[in-house]
Amino acid sequence: MLNESVDPPGCRCSSLLLMTEIRVMTGGDIEAVSAIRVHGWQRAYAGIVPQPCLDAMTVAADAARRRAWFENDTGRVENLVSADGAEVTGWASHGPYRGEDAEPGDGELYAIYVRPDLIGTGAGRALVGAVLTRAADRGFRRVRLWVLADNAPARRFYEKAGFVRDGAEQLEDYDEVSLREVRYVRGTPPSSPASW
Image (cartoon, rainbow, N blue to C red):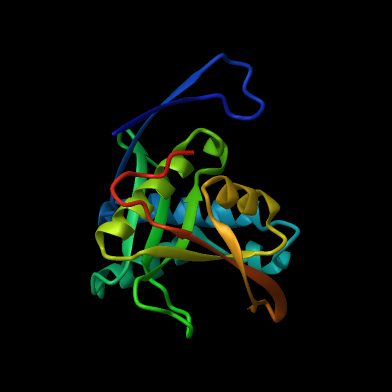
């Protein structure tokens, strides 16, 4: 369990104590993770991803897809959640890098989302630290990720976590609109989580 005292942007308090436990996601977390993912998309990508694409997202549909994935899980992908007590506050998914230019030892952070009202409380930092540590434990020497080029807050978050752009770009289609993604990379820690 990580105890983190931080002042989120806009907080008028002197300190906010967030009790963050990072653990492997279970089937019982599916609804909460789906809500975090859908609401995270709708907030983070508003004005970037076409609005009809965001409006069409539902927690129920996402949860159904996630349940099907859980039933066929091969162990290749690891899903972690952050929790404050019994409440799931964030989710991250990682595993082997999926790109054609993958090299031995390449991992990938596929997704990371924190409940929108908890952004800035340290749950995201705790998840990234856990992903980097778990990726190292799984034999990955570095972790790559793709982020929408226009998602400035996410890019700043990854840069503060020690990720750097490696120059790779790709186009991803959202409702027949191609959006540019940029790739970031970071080495995994030898034995301790990220310190930032």
